[in-house]
Structures are given as C-alpha cells and as structure tokens.
Image 1 (tube, rainbow, N blue to C red):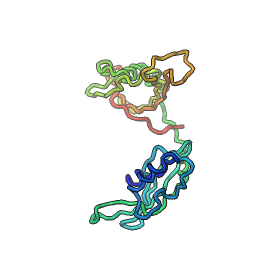
Image 2 (cartoon, rainbow, N blue to C red):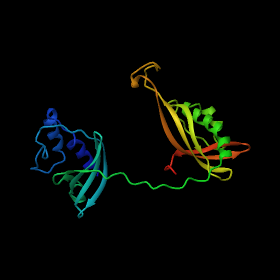
Image 3 (cartoon, rainbow, N blue to C red):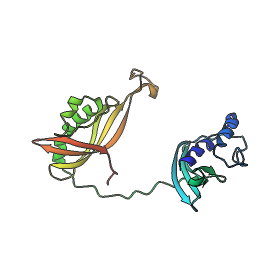
Image 4 (spheres, rainbow, N blue to C red):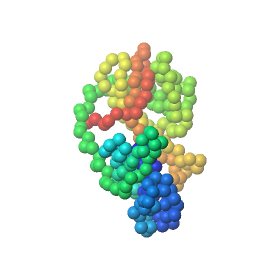
Length: 239
C-alpha cells in the first residue's frame, strides 16, 4: 500500500513545466514498456495532497488493486492502482501493473443521534473553576502549576506554551461517583508565529486566532475538590 501511495504522489501531480521530471520519477514505479506519462498528454495541471493508502483488493497472491485517498482542491477523491508483487523469492518487489483510475471518494457516513447522558449540574459547577485552572497550566507548561490540578499519584504532559488558554466553553458531567469521565470543550488562543499581535490589523495572518477542541477527562474527587487523572481526545457528539 505504501508503494501505491508513493506512486500516487507522483502520478497525481503534474503540469507542463515538470513533464520531464514527472516521467523520470514515474519510471521507478512502472513496468518496462509502459507509457512514461501514464496516459497524460502533457497539458493541463493537477495537484494532489493528503495522499494516504485506503484499501486493498487482492485478486491472487501476486496481484491486487490498491485504493489511495487524496485531496485535490476542495474535492476528496480516490485513486485505484493495479499492483503486481514479485513474491519473496524474487526480491519482494512491486510494480504498477496497469493504468490507474481516479474515482469519487465515498460520501461521509450518516451519523445517527444518540441520547445525551443524564448530567450532574452541581458537579459541573464545582469542576468548572478547577478545569479552567487546569487548562491554563496545561497550555502554559508550568509543571508545578499544572500539578496542583492533577490527581495524586498522576502526572500529565503539557503543551509547553504552544497554545494559550482562552475559554472553557462547555463542561458535560454525567451522574456518578467520586471518579467520572467528563467532556469539555476548550477554546485555545492560537499564536500567529513570530509576528507580534496587532489588534487593528486587517490581515487575518497578522493576528492570533482561536481554536475549539473537545476533550474527555477522567476526574477524581479528593476531599472537597476535583482533580484531573487523565485527558484524551473527545468522543462523538451527542444529542
């Protein structure tokens, strides 16, 4: 599958200015006697990014059709590539065995709604100031400050200043005991590189931005306070 993805990176990117370079690169993937441009007439342009192996459909021990996903402009598409494998006794080599085909990518799956869990608003109110402090230190990289919000016996890495905490937008706390898995939506302030922020700038690249992220946290109540024992990426939306 990696061989097909590497081939796709060359095959799906062309313009008349680099036709010679493209054919030279394609030669590393093609069987002897194949069209060095693989059906392209030398005109027009195509650019593809986010090229990833997607699926493989073997027909026997040595032949398969490998599907590769890619993005071209606003469109997500697939490239189907016939591949031949020589076998371990012949060096374990691969070659493109025929012309590839570009296909539309499958549409996104329909996401059914799920019922929202019963929530504990009182616990959420207790947790909110603790979580605000936690995420502030989680962003800043102050290890001693972060540890004040982390459960005893646990330690967590931080962003080390990559982001700045802006807002705790939402906290969902299910009903439960002293240990619970909660969800939080956090707004990070995103820096604009080395350029000092300018609140009056009209160029979006000249000002810092914000980015909403969803997290799952395991929290434990120790005494009269809640502490974070673990943090992971958020799960699917509910409701």
